[in-house]
Length: 237
Image (tube, rainbow, N blue to C red):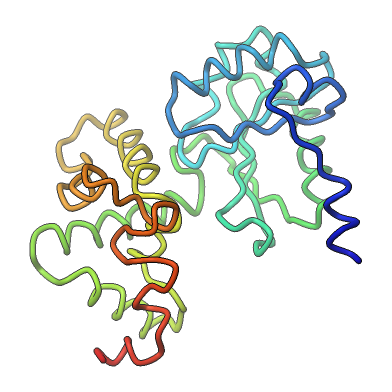
């Protein structure tokens, strides 16, 4: 059937040279830590053919913070897919300091080929477009819960009720992974140096306990059947 046919078109390997040897475009999606991303780009730059464009799927780190790890910064750029990409109709593209128009056009063409519309970030921005907006929401939600203004569940109830969504900000953070949320927040903190941008205690305590979200079975909620998935939960039942 269709699923089996799709699976046949997907190959995987633990060998980086094997993975990129015939690639036209390479997308890095390692953890949200700058030193690790720079090392991966350094290796990819050595392994990839000269006409291959190399993209980062980082959700917050500018490609200009990575590009000098390569000898060919003209072919590197940000290509950010949102979480659960098979459900999304858009992604984000952002140039670095040296990215050529040709590299961007290749990335745009690839995006259209998979029926995903490329949103262009017109100037470098930590967090790009959506995650910059989402970050403000996420930060305030964490602050409201961390300072005892409201229980995190009531924050989610308010969001889900008002915006008619099936998940709230804390549920979304669980999906992303609370360790990843922390790493993203640290990107903003290192950029600003302001104490108010440090990850709050409520988040760090969860991580310390090993509660990282969906991937560990517990974060702010318990999985695979989180409370917010039950219709009566919105009404406090």
